[in-house]
Image 1 (tube, rainbow, N blue to C red):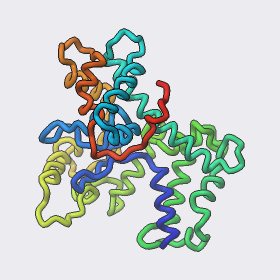
Image 2 (image 1 turned 90 degrees about the vertical axis):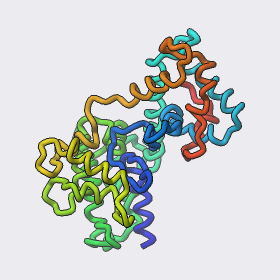
Image 3 (image 1 turned 135 degrees about the horizontal axis):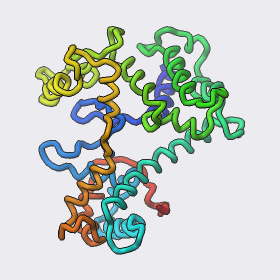
Length: 317
């Protein structure tokens, strides 16, 4: 059991990011809003903007007093204002949000790379990855069909399938770029079918290659509550109105793809426009440093996040 728990911890660090449940709700969308917080709901949630704007720096700001938060936020604005004209445009804000997201991915890849490139030859063979990830488990455990409800053998096969898809030149090794595709497949076009397939396999309990309404709801909600929450009722309506586009009572592969990787929606663009709308006092569609600092709670004022403390490194943009 201890080995299984160690394995699950490792796998959790390697799979693509999925938002944490909110009020018991699991979110499968991978081309997702830039924060794990609900953005609007019944009232506007500044925690969403806080995480989207800062990324891993969010937790650092949360530990600061208001004056220090404002000072560091002002320093950050100087980096966001790339043309140094004293204004932050929507495009500059969008590029900053994209930067914070990419920075997280690149740092994650570097961290994982150093752990798996065992012979330091600037490429990782499948055996290196497999031995590092599963090596603490005996062959008997790897071949066991079921271990406390988890099919370990299938987990290895699933990793191998994703690995082979990321291996663009089919040389049995992954470069750092290919390894990034393996760790974060949702960000790479040729990997997105793998994301869809893995989601289908997770939710499709009867194995018919589609997701029924009950499978869809069952993946999000355990049903422990005596009364179905309002958000579950809303999801039932969403399934019939938006998810099941052909009205056959289930989602096929294309419909699953549209659900978890929504097409034609740029979250960084939408969030940057929203932040300007909330902060642009004089309505000129760009922000001064003072306007941003005056709204510091919108950007950095949350006590609910728990990200890293990268800001203390004073990274360059």
